[in-house]
Length: 479
Ligand code: FAD
Ligand code: MLT
Ligand code: ZN
Image 1 (spheres, rainbow, N blue to C red):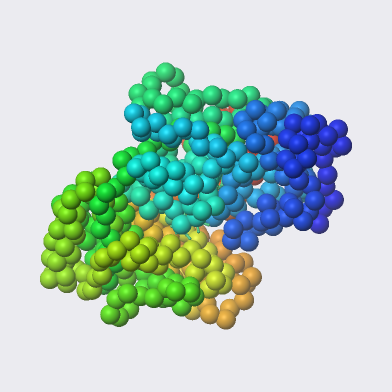
Image 2 (image 1 turned 30 degrees about the horizontal axis):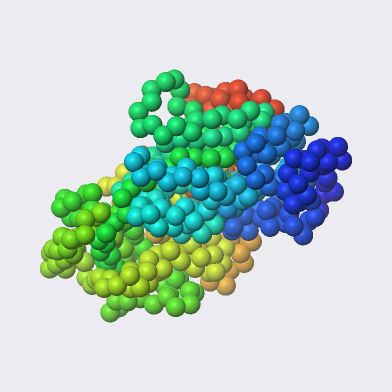
């Protein structure tokens, strides 16, 4: 392990600003901040800094900047791409937002929430719900992921199909820039054409341009009726046809439309306590569909029954179960939400968080499955995800009994095989998880030329010393 420590004068100055509990240096305390959720990356840091508000954060960043110390912003540490993990040099400090955790206001006239970056998504959802409102972003990691993290990654998730990504929810933002200056964009305006949209630059920048400390998030009226169903389907094409059937009736009613392959579902049922398939028999694939409306009438039930009734008659759906209570609804969602955890328990896996145009999904899944099975015999191809957004988590799980390290040593071969098919179909190599450190090597071939050059210029303008989350998103300049 590298011997790392802050210069004593910097350490003391940081303790002055953040208090003793705001500066962690004991390896036993800092270790968890240096490993990602998937345990793919094991970094080191000189300290973990825990500011309690924007002012403390700005002062700490200014000091680190003056001492040329790299900084790694971290929220709930649920990144799927190693975005919040420091490198192995031990030079960086992790700046954790977890102590910035106040919900300031919920505004019923504007339908907004003003909130600190370190409030978990779940806590923010619960606060909205307690006031009859909805924070319309839902991801399986919401108990840990926080507002700063979801904005920094422009998270998507289960409700993107209806409400858009995190980007669409952020009306206002406050951020500490790499030199410690505070960018205050905490406006609540739906219309504001006054120069460059700096808040949108911060959203999705994965901690490379500054530390988000507060946000104004758009809310919605809470649904008063919901209908949720799990459907067995024969193929991805059938799942898409079902999506089209719902969309034709009422696109605004579709709150979630999630796809699960037979392989990924079998992993959940085999590895997660309490998960059972509530259908007659296993199927090649499944869809979890949720309809929701702020109206408290029974029109959603008839919409669900009409569409599913016809789909069952036509053979588009081969079996289906409708939630008859909130607890049944939660059991159906648990099956979907445990997909990432089940795949983690199944051994090493390679995640391809890709998007393609909707119509190309069946061709993509078929071609990528064939190519990966040819590359690694016995590989378990376990796709699932947000099919209504064209976003498939084309995840590859190691063959049973294989050596995890040997499997992971081939990660680029697997990622590149999948990515080339995605490229031919006009898709993206990272739909919602971002680039982090895992996928920087793909940037030159996917976002090269003027696009990457513009990104580098923006980065150099805001962070000329390359101190804010170095090594993430942008590959080294010679690449
Ligand atoms: P972290 O992991 O702490 O950080 C993520 C990135 O943002 C890093 O680059 C970090 O430096 C930066 N960052 C964090 N906080 C700040 C801040 N305040 N200011 C500036 N930069 C910051 N993602 C989806 O989009 N959709 C999903 O459905 C989804 N499901 C998931 C399910 C599981 C089980 C897990 C483990 C992850 C999932 N993710 C999903 C990926 C992950 O990106 C999200 O959980 C979330 O957006 C990350 O939030 P976080 O607070 O954990 O951020
Ligand atoms: C999810 O939607 O559950 C996560 O984004 C996916 C993953 O584990 O790849
Ligand atoms: Zn996802």
